Length: 372
Image (cartoon, rainbow, N blue to C red; front, side, top):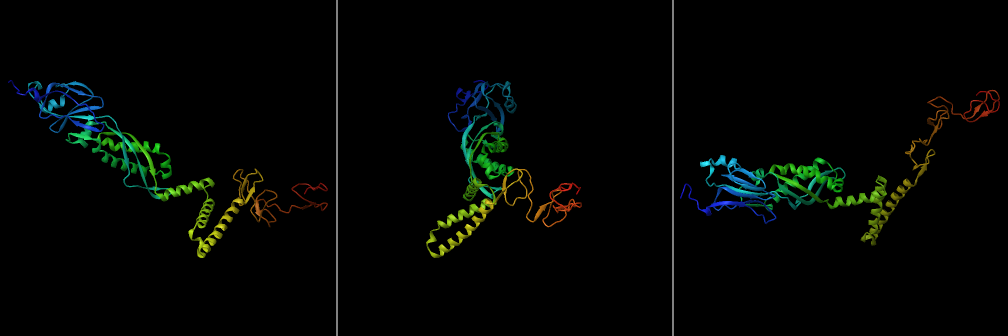
């Protein structure tokens, strides 16, 4: 019978895997007690990698293509087996086909809300969901870290674990970025890129690459959403404290008018008192916005209490003050001399020669021409 007494049924002459599934990550070729012949044919299709394992140790990795198994392309396995006779005898090894294509449209979401510190709303909790895609980029690391010795390994076996890594990384990204909730919701595409980079650092440790990450939505608690709506309504009128007071007063007045208990006397009294108070607040608010003055220099309209014009910088004289007739400094209305230049504030100057009272700032008497 010769040196080796293997029957043809015990020898494998060809190895290949035709993937007819959509979710298989790893397929272990069924050996069924058979051994591989020297010179056997190995076919590795595109988006596949074949890995030979002997006694639990990863030996050789084959990229896509057609391979005839010889000692030249099985260097590590040859060393592990150390078979005599030029390694012409049949040998045994486990063969794993790794699927390296992209697995897309895998859904993720936050089962528990993410707590974040927001500069506008304080500490809040947000929820988020979306999809992601990944693929195996380092088959050796992937087999060592995740696969083990299973006969098959599907995406369902790993997606829960990847989802937990994904949510944890996104939570860290939000905390480190210190982005406000409003900015976060308005810049999802930019945040996707930042989060994807941080998540990939964790995926790479498993021999995987996150090829795409989509954050479809970020939702806020009901209280925060109401606060956002309120801020948007205020934004139409202008974001000032006066605007906020008027907005709150108008809102409270409307709620009081819609109060179902307003038919009884007590409710009417409370409603009337609230209405009067709100009316006063509104009146004061309207007064503050209605009191305007015009800048004498540039004609800009500004608040009546403004001390400087925001357009040209003109300084207004405060009540009880006046300007020096000589240098223009602001001085007390009762001052007779300017504390800045020492000039007398008496605008009527008497000529020493003829006794005529001269007005203005002229240097000579308008009656006799004498120098004042």
